[in-house]
Image 1: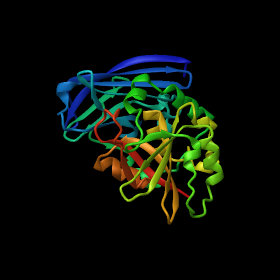
Image 2 (image 1 turned 30 degrees about the vertical axis):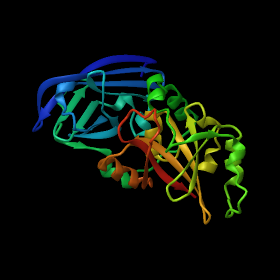
Image 3 (image 1 turned 180 degrees about the vertical axis):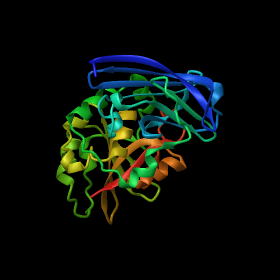
Image 4 (image 1 turned 90 degrees about the horizontal axis):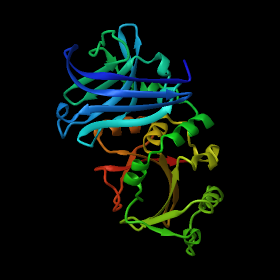
Length: 305
């Protein structure tokens, strides 16, 4: 495809597979291997308590194959989602913008779709990624994916999600070491490497366990030895990273054990929990920091072994 491509397509509601009223629009701006999406749905088209997932789809015979993008959020008097991904591999999926045919929005009670062309959209024959997640082959991340995620960092997202886990306080690297005897720590060398380069946040859980976290922004990930920390080879992790622009590395210490976790930002709901568990993220930690503005925001956590 050409180095620069920009277009707008209108979103319509669908009922029983039939196209209905206009509901909003989607803007796509692709330059080189950077592709920006902006999905906008009118406020009155979706109920306040309803959730709505956004996919980009590819036509496969008479069906639509969906690649998950994100979930609509209420802002600026409308429902919106925006993000940046690679043009040739949308959200690390199996197809790029050139192969895509439009976007598909799946609400609790409504379906919406927009097509890049004038061809009919078989909205009742849609296959979302959840049906294939258990068989999916996860794609390792390279430097190009890190670059795409760097471009995804938006100032308003940084401000909205600039929070630690729990009632945390900033501490110096030296505070991470404890005088009391602790169990063997096979990752201590790698953790020490990180604490010398990034700020460490500490909080204490109700059971007395001490948790230290390091927030990795888009510009930080390329400095991390990913072969040591299992970063970039999990499509659920990549999705959260693209959408929110950061990850968390966590170290949880008790008298009996020391564990390390990777935390992927997201919002808790039952459908997201099902997807997260498919990719090994079984625990959700809710953020309690004062700067958190998004209800239910937290981190899907997976143990690092």
